[in-house]
Image 1 (cartoon, rainbow, N blue to C red):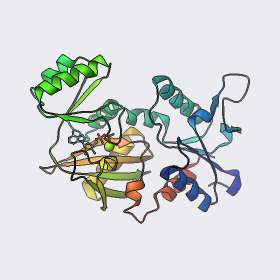
Image 2 (cartoon, rainbow, N blue to C red):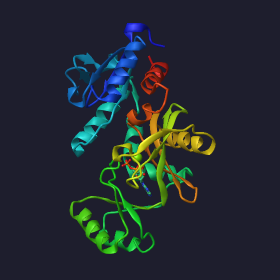
Image 3 (cartoon, rainbow, N blue to C red):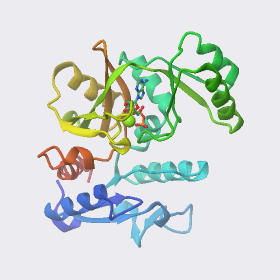
Image 4 (cartoon, rainbow, N blue to C red):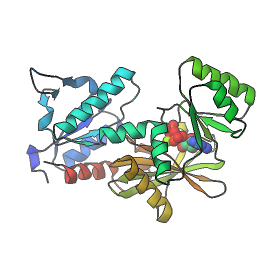
Length: 298
Ligand SMILES: Nc1ncnc2c1ncn2[C@@H]1O[C@H](COP(=O)(O)OP(=O)(O)O)[C@@H](O)[C@H]1O
Ligand SMILES: [Mg+2]
């Protein structure tokens, strides 16, 4: 355990005033843990001539744990540098939550789904290609598809297509803009799915997200959260999926098909919890901070 003021918790965030980051800072204050936020642009990485990593005047090796909030939209350079900086943090003995290796795997919708499927987790049938004519051919066996950005979140940019002419135009356009085509069989469902919030090896809270307006059940797409207690098979599915991707904190999306089968859609390695917090008594920020304290290496 940490010893009062000598322990330091960093919150890596784009927006310290956002719901997630401010509730983490508040939870740390209540727990008597010294905490501070920093942004990616605050990171000074050096090779020779000084400490390898500094943020806001602090030598990163003096920080015990860092909680990573959403990395957000970034250029390829930024995405790689940001992950590299997290790897250096780990090298310096900081407990980074989630680990950069876990973030890397989870952010990438193809890699993560492949790993989940390989370990026996049920996931929707998916095809990933660069060539639009190959994608189009697959529409013979998958006539109703969801096209997703490989690095998307919050439901943004996902499109459901069953019209072949429209599909052909969109697929060609995707290729023209050098997007990788990620297409998934549409699973008929009742406009609701499950979000399980996992910390360590435990589902600390869960909700059903219901959206009368759309097949996309993200809270950002207007879905309304309702609390549920996750048990049995669904609970195991959430915990096992989190573990496969190496996440310590995760938001797992589970879809129940009309015929009653469960599919894991994705594991979010930098989950938000505003919607979930509005329907649960569990203080999620406190749970995350407690976990960081308990698992701190120094
Ligand atoms: N294959 C699918 N079939 C039916 N609905 C889907 C499918 N994939 C995603 N959805 C719906 O779209 C939402 C967003 O998909 P998801 O894979 O979680 O990506 P995002 O990162 O945008 O949240 C899901 O919560 C679900 O409601
Ligand atoms: Mg999702």
